[in-house]
Image (cartoon, rainbow, N blue to C red; front, top):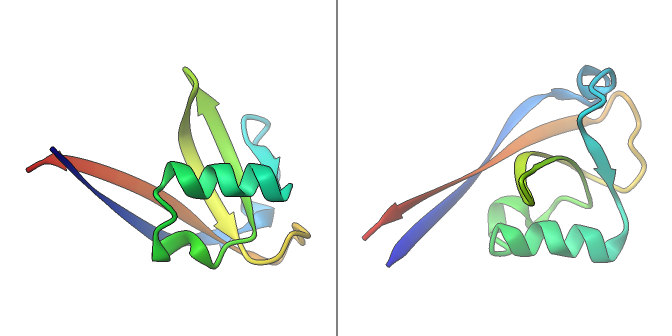
Length: 87
């Protein structure tokens, strides 16, 4: 059985991510729900309304969350990470 942990760590602002062409903006409510569901809808990410995601091999390689759906450059972003361990 796997036990997964999710953490969100502040990583700057949207301006810091602005030049990265490998990230996709996610603000549609269905897509946001899919990202949250990937992480198990944990408290660490419940508060986020939008995400920047990097997708590789059909999985999320990197995920950054932010508050609200408008990606203003001065908004804070949080790197969201999931680690899983066997029990």
